[in-house]
Length: 335
Ligand code: EPU
Image (cartoon, rainbow, N blue to C red):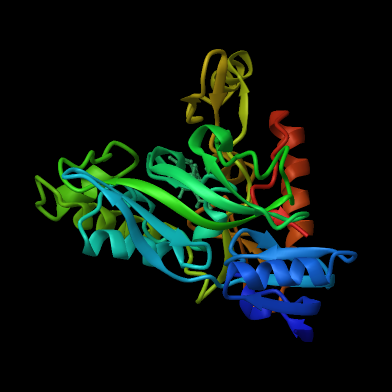
């Protein structure tokens, strides 16, 4: 156990915050030992720190999950179920799958974060969400230490949502995640955004999963800042889902607003468009800023504190509410 440990290198915003106590777990037993020992003080579970804005020092314990390993659990001639431990880096799991020609997560290349946190917010990008390949996960009940299997149904996945963010919030620690992937006849998803154009530019007519992943990597690198170079947490807000009627009204007022169907009577509006339209793209408040290529991403130009980034986020929320009558909610966890 370490005392007063800086978390600056453990959150992708790169903001300073100190953990009163810090424990790193390499096994499920380490996790249980920590939970048992610190039963009466708050324990914050930390994964890759890529969906987190630390606005203060952390009283109590920060428990960093570093369980490693990827293995094949089951396979048939055309499918495989792999299991990755919670501390595996998500993109390294993608690379493992590409190296073994296991298809299904190539569109999710380069998403920051760890395996264990992927189900919590049902990570998604370029037309694919974790739930599309999710088989199950094993999680430890924080109060009893019991390990429990959660199926796809149990997880109640939605857009950046799961049971672990809602009714079971802070009750379980995810230990490992199992994905069901294809070994042949991969179901490529090329319709989102500019994947097809990027492949065409490279003269690739029948892409492999590795080529799709590379196209996604190229697109992400062109739009999204690399946290190693510029602190950020990916999309800061969720794309708001509003009643269809409100969407239609906005469309008459702003004919160029992009609107996507989101189930019966609801539509999804890109928060990035709203934020850009409200004039925030590329804006700075001290060292906290709105990224110049993707207005949905807030960045730390160096010395911003978590509170400064949160202040900027709240300014954006207030402005979007006033201008469009839409309440943006943070996708990132604010601590
Ligand atoms: N847009 C703008 N201005 C901007 C940004 C976006 O006008 O500055 C508009 C454009 O019309 C664009 C549309 O928004 O066509 C959608 O933009 P983009 O394809 O970049 O995706 P997004 O909706 O902003 C979502 C996810 C990203 C994911 C991309 C690609 C959320 C909250 N974000 O962003 O996920 O990479 O789609 O699938 O759903 C993340 O969660 O951290 C993340 C980066």
